[in-house]
Length: 355
Image (cartoon, rainbow, N blue to C red; front, top):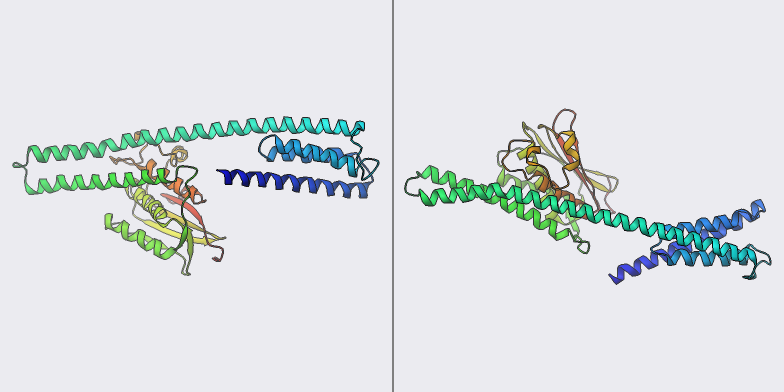
């Protein structure tokens, strides 16, 4: 916390020094070219305003106004290159700049507080939506597992072997789904706090895709995936386990929610020092009115895109958005003109990688 505060103080100090230096030399240039002093106080007032808006709190704006008054008095007021702090012009300039600094600082502080309150409110709303969706989605598989267990226990001697296997298979499937849901929730809590940052390490793109495909085929062995990645070697700084989870969530969402899908494609493009990942399908697409809620962590049961009994799409996409933003990337979705939807996300590549 202290290091962060010191960095902010240093940043504000450098911005103030840089701004006033530019203003000072700009006034010297205008005085030489136009032989006028009219714009000099106004230019310093503009500099004070910029410092007050950019810097944190009131101090830097007031400090910048005092330095500006001294600079105007010393270099641009007769007698030149000498201080005459009791002159009416100096006193008037000091009052004006102090008022500008204080008013601007007050307005800026108020705006920043309002933005912080708004951000906290949005965060609480998303957390409430997430908890509501989790409680709603966990109920169905837990009920199924409980019902299957009860059926086996109460009717063990009357059920045939095929019926036993069917009930146990349903329990295993629901347990796997619950396990993936818990992994998603753990990923959110892992990187949700402001103090927690993802630990990035260089990861080979081809190796990442191979691991994802192996995991995916364990659960969906009959689903074909068309893969398209660059031929050249590409290394991307990332938390490999989290990005694997993002790709798994996007691929699984396509399987469960892209009704009518016959083609599933995973593509990666390297461009402008960033990698663009795309998971595309030719299914039912996404209604335009649902686009804004996809990454919020909450989709109503009646908003499900298919008749699936488990609607964890909002949860999975919320996890994806949280992970990608923690990596400094972007995530978005588009409907394909020919049908289906494409989910995209970007990651910054290492400096040495080129297209």
